[in-house]
Length: 78
Image (cartoon, rainbow, N blue to C red):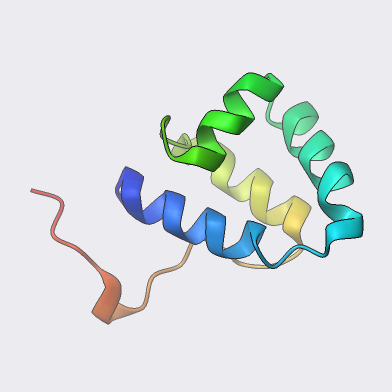
């Protein structure tokens, strides 16, 4: 999965988080992924790639599978 795909899937989920839960989820991601709010904003804007090793932690926080691609969405990364 490339940077663009991870960002699109993350933002797709992030946009579905109820407004009353946004601050709590943001705080939990920052704490459990050991990042700063600055890095979180870069993930949110797509400026910085979300590392593969934190994808499972984000899904754990979300309580759902986020980072999955349909076969039709797989983009050749070469």
